[in-house]
Image (tube, rainbow, N blue to C red; front, top):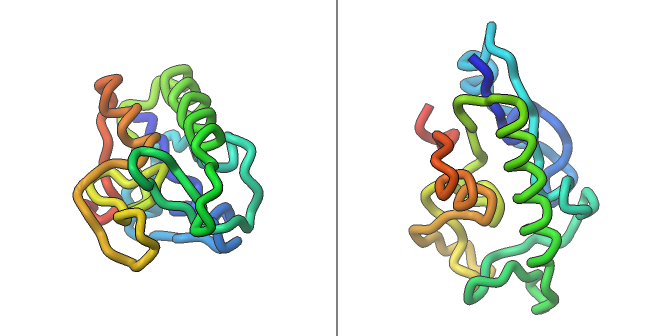
Length: 138
């Protein structure tokens, strides 16, 4: 099976703070599978490290209010194309991310408060009937 995975979960240092979210559970789950690492934020042109972002009234913004929505949406479109072109049957995503949050995201107040919702990439995958799994579901 081909599985696309948030690159940070595979140990790539592409997280907003320059680190990663390596997951032993993901590593075990994808053993023997063809893995397609994917980071929509980097694909959209954002640097690593970068300012943290949250979805504020439907727009992805930094804490200072500056918009990075165009970069997030561009990255989501490019990442979707990569998933489709690769033939991935499943996409495993990092929790809570404004790109990859599959079932919950931060509320846009930069206070650490979670709400139900999806990041821009997760939503695009769902709209295109691609199976998404939040890393917390493993």
